[in-house]
Image (cartoon, rainbow, N blue to C red; front, side, top):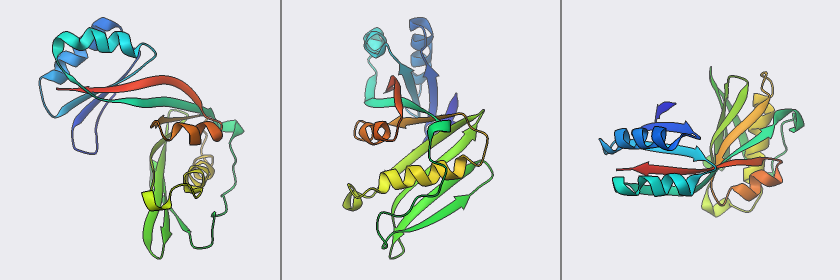
Length: 183
């Protein structure tokens, strides 16, 4: 899969490549400072070691691909953890977003899109000043209630090291580690 990331870089995402496939993609990535290669694998150290002669930077190796059976997820819109939080649902053709505000200022947000029977969650963010107050769970549950209106079987997301505990608490399972390589 190829897409444009937040910094307008061309990002190639690959799942469990052979060493040959990985080295070919890494070589292509090395040609431009505007390209990144995201690798999802259970052989992270083998692939990183194979890339050593290319002298590329590993910029992120603490994320993980996680999944959840959507039949086991809560289908009802959650209650805010406190009355000060206001929830807004934004529905676009291919994406659902939620935004949590306090006095008009966004303090948490996230999005989910349906792709081939999968619910793909992205950018689940809580403002640092509002962490540890249940907003991550609240956003995930609100997004899940929205996307379960569609026919989805599996949830997928990329979890940061700090987010893994939240997602495991919500019933998500670790599938593979992830690393990002660039010139």
